[in-house]
Amino acid sequence: MNKLDEDALHALKIAFCYMPKSIEVNEFDFAGRVERVLADIEKVREVLLINEVDPDEVYGDLNPDDSPNSSY
Image (cartoon, rainbow, N blue to C red; front, side, top):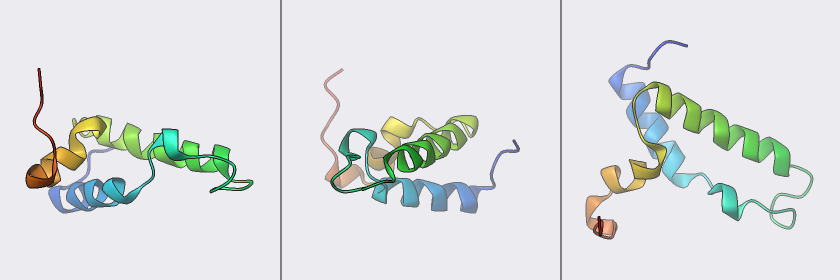
């Protein structure tokens, strides 16, 4: 897979911030779609990693004033 250009990567980061976290995906909220939603989340995480972006840091990078300070 090729790396994304900066605009596409930024758009993906924004979209990722609005995606549910894997732990939030359940049968009640995503009836009949749990496996598909989890696969979609994993695919986006993979593309971020290919583009040298840590998915767990995306929200804080885009929203530094809305993120807790790191303790490590």
